[in-house]
Length: 277
Image (tube, rainbow, N blue to C red; front, side, top):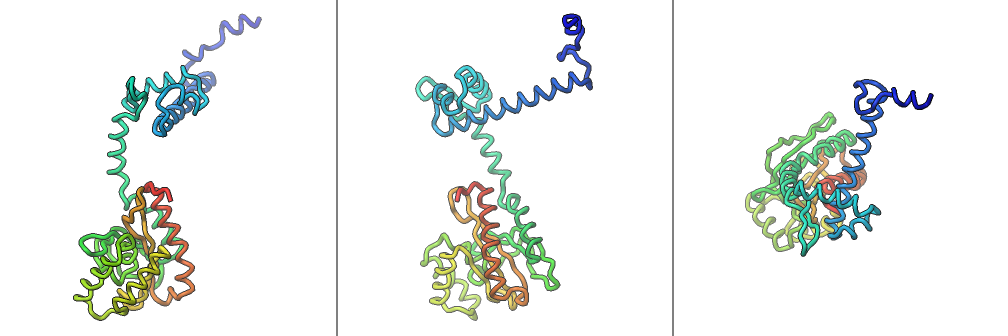
C-alpha cells in the first residue's frame, strides 16, 4: 500500500504551482540558496583576511574542501576571486568595480540624512551637516527644528569657520599654526569677535580634546549650537554635524546634555562611512 501511495505522489519537480508540495520545494530551494550565498561571502571574507588556500579556508570555516572548492570556483568565474599557482586565492577585479560604485553611491549626505532626521526629531532643534570648502563652512544638509523660533540656515549656504561650531570641529585635524592662519584671515573681514587669538587657540585646544565644539552666540546673535566631527574609514574628519537653537532653548545645562547625543550621532554616521572607532 505504501508503494502505491509513493508511486502516485506528486513529483516536487513537476508539482503544479500553488500546491503545498511546490511551495515546500520553493521554500527549501530559497533556504539552500541563501545558505550557499552566505558561505560564498564567508569564503570572500576569509580570502580578504589572508586565507589563500583551500586548506586554510576549509579550516577557518569548518567546511570540507570539496564545498570550499565549489564555492571558490564559482567566485573565480565571476571575477570575485582570482587563483594563481604562486599566490593562491586573492580578491578579484570585480570587487574593485563594486567598491568604486559603492564609493560613488555612499555619499556623506545620503549616509548622514537618516541620522540627522532622528536627531532633529528627538531634540526639536535645527540640525546641520557641513564640510570645509574654499576656507568656509559649506552647509550640505539641514533638518529644520520644531521650535517656535527657527534658526536661519539654508542648504548650500556658506559661513565663516572661526565662530561656528561646525567650523571649529572641521579644524580638529589641523595644527595650531593653521588655526592661527584661519583666525587672522577671518579677523581681517570680521574684526569684532568675542575671543582674541590667544583665547581662541586655547578654546580650540579644549574643544579638540573633548571632540566637540560650541558656538555661543558667536556667529549669530542669540543662536547657539553643539557640534561634533564625522570621520571616514581612515579616521579623517570629512564633515561635522551640529544641533542649533535659539539661546532661550540652549542654556548651559542643556548644551552639556546635548554633547553626548550629538557625538553619538556623529559616531554612528562615521561608522556607516567605514570608521572603525
